[in-house]
Image 1 (cartoon, helix red, strand yellow):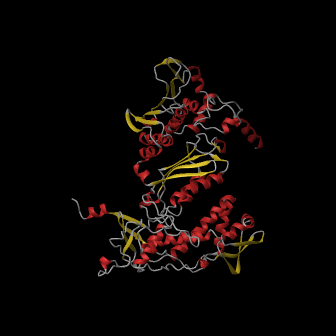
Image 2: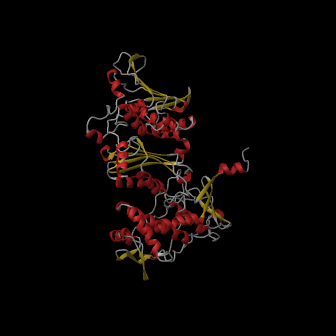
Image 3: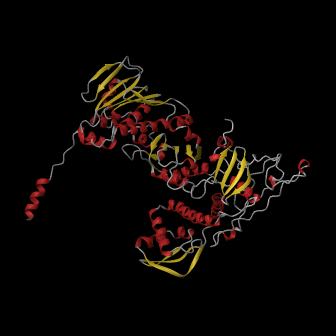
Length: 622
């Protein structure tokens, strides 16, 4: 029986041999060329590296039957055309030092060879010095004179004709066309100085002319994206983060408007994606997806682009710096104070000096004798911040009524109502008029009617105050009368010992009693009803998965979730009747609070109804 097994193994063994070049290229094509869009991406990369100012992509059958990419770049000399389709032949790099600091879109020297191995490929190119162009047929190697202006045209026909199994995995022509168009769109957003055109079956599908960055974004993603987003400009040492971040209220159901670039190269990087999710985490509702176009400019030597054959993934040498830079850049623009429609239109008045760690309301507009005395909305003493009982939601100093004037001595003026001498338009959120159904506050501003969800608005105000105070001291731990013990894995015990400081910052005291036993001696005072064992296991599991640099962010996130719960319970409830003075105090505090346009759960806190919209309801002017 043993002899039979030995003979069978010897029969199955095959000698080690070097693979033929064509098979090697076809294997490489499996990594580089997934579908027609992959070919389009690689060829447009080459066109941009050649200094093109106009790139035209012509497709047939969604790119399955034919792809032609034409550019007006510097061209390829005739004697270098045969080298262009050889594996690992490139003009982009020469040494390891150049590879480590590569700034071009392509550099691996694999794309054309891989594409030529699974298609019929031809190159027509002309340099400025050449009397005419030359055409190279990749299959036969034949080089012939051709007619063409300066630049390069690359023709790719019958993709995957030599590997029918790969062709079966392609989708419909319409689907492949959509993917190819998206590949060009990604380049177009990064290079507004270059014109792009896409043709399909002889018809113009998309065209983007040379423009400014903002105009190119409007052309590619629509004017609504520019209107519903804010400019991002953040510097962190030699690194810069630029672009536009969509407002929370303009979030989408799909993640189809998310573009991140590193040194002009479109990337799908987990670190950058996580930083962006972190920046949006407490202003988005449900599973909504933010829209953004961000460009990270960083020293090429500090990022490794040679980690994936398609160059769509990168590795940062200082990942923590990049994470913090991206998160702070986007958080900065999302943290605008409330009161500008969709967070866009109105510049806030300068704020007074902050008190007790919180931002003060904006200074009163000139010429408002009683409005200038508007008091801020206040909470109970912050010494009870992490006590079990939530802070008292309202403690508002009343606003004095406007003094009577000579012209109105005989007329009673409702407290808080604007008079003719006191326009309600000076405050971004205007003056309170009334309360509707115990839920909404109605106010008047320069644009028309403002409707405020008072619970959602006050919830955000309380939440931001709690966060500001929490930055100054850790969560208070509540010692347990009887420590709770539980059986733990050796990994959990190791994490509890190594991360004792991080656990203490979360209000947890977890100590080992043995090799496989842990004791919970304290839990956060803000979570008196939480199961100590379940809470301990959950936190230990997250800490085990995170690097020490990321643990700080996890602690902040866990703390913010606790504070969000406290804020929800501490905010004013529906059906609570407010005076005009209290409503105005709420509006003023919204104007001075970061992220006041959304509550902690991402729901909007207020809506603007313009005079034009109101006139339309009543058919005025028709």
